[in-house]
Structure formats: structure tokens, C-alpha cells
Image (cartoon, rainbow over all chains, first blue to last red; front, side, top):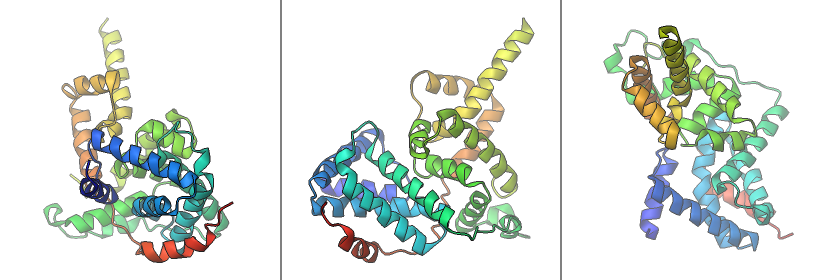
Length: 205
Length: 83
């Protein structure tokens, strides 16, 4: 794969869509090469990995924290661990799973330290389309409604939904990221879908 | 006999319901993939659920925060001291 093609694929991943299997494997191999170079304190490799993961981590953490300051801190704390511990990466999971698991732990830690839980206004999920026929609901409104419905889920369920649909992770990868059994991932997803269907009823066909 | 078949169908339906999100994102392989493919042909509930989940996946929520990669990276750089 050429440099331009890879850049294009990464842009698509940043936007939330998943590339085909072969392309994905190339990106994974490239990430592994970067990690090996970072283990030798290659700053250029770190720069490339940082810029490649920044948009994905931002999207992931956005749904967890909704705080610009917190997101930036968590990304930097996560990538600092990557810089310091790249030599311990043993290839038993994907580089992305390893980095997301660090970010998830850092985010949980940061949220525990904040004594100010975000209150979600459930009513706003439906208020967004009041009096509007379903066919007139714009894509942007739909995205906002889905965002609000997601925010109404417990953090663990929201994370499973986010990692599955919007980061393309399999249940095994999510279990590794969240450090929990696969069955817990599946149960969280089951309950999340049930709740989302209720919250989004009438807003999605 | 019919009761046993119905119970078996129910078990398959529940298994497929559990696996559907990862079918939607094309992450299933082997027996799991076959199971879902077979069941989807005969189960309207799962078909409708599949369509719903595809819409959900195709509509990623908006990013609500603006962050600049260069300024974030500039803040991290001083912390990257070789150990």
C-alpha cells in the first residue's frame, strides 16, 4: 500500500468508517513497526503514531468525558505511557487495542477524580424532533439524537456501543480494552441496545 | 419433539441476537458467521434488528469538542524525556 493510500485509509478510520480486512492488517503492521521504533526512542515514529491515534482517541474519549481539557490530558497521559512502555508491548494484541486499553483506564481514573457527574437530559433526546415528520429529520439531527441517547447509557454500556459501531472492534478486542470477560461485553451490548431502542423509538426507522 | 425444536430455535435466535452487532461491523468469522447468515434468512425480527443497527452504525454521533493536534502535541513534547 502506498503512503497516499494509507493516509486516505487512516482518514476514513478517523471519520469512523472501517477499511477492508487487508488494508486494516497493513495499518496494524505499520503501527507495530512504529511501536518497535518508539521503543528505541524514535521521536519521528512517535510523532506519526500520535497524529494517527489522536482523532480516534478524541472521538472515543469525547463520548466518555465531554470535556476538552480532560480529553487532551487523557490523550497525552496515554501517549506518554506509549512512549515510556513501548518496549513492553509484546504483540499479543493489536497496537490499537493496547493504546485504547491504556486510554480507557486513564479516562476511568480521570472521571473518578472529578466530583461533578454530567447530568443527561433524557427529554432532550425526543425534544430534538418535536413536531417534525420523520423524513425531515436531518442527518445532523439524527447524529445529535444518537449522541444524546448514547450519553443516557451507563458508561460501560456506552463504551461497548462506541467501540463496536464507531471503532469497529470485535467483542474480544473490547474485552481486552475494558479488561473484562467477553460475556460481560455481550451482556452490556444487549442491555445497551434495548435501552437505545427505547430512547430512539420514533426517531430511527 | 416440536417443543424441542422450538426451544432449539429460541436458543439460536438468542445467540444470533447477541452476535448481531459484530455481524453488522463484519467482525464475525467461521461458525458464528454461518449461524447468523442462516438465521437471518428465516427470522424477521433479526432482519429488522439488523437494519436498525446498520442505521445506528451509519450515523456516528457528532464530535462535540474541538481539539487541535498540534497544540496538544506541543504540550506533551516536554514530558518525553528518555528514561
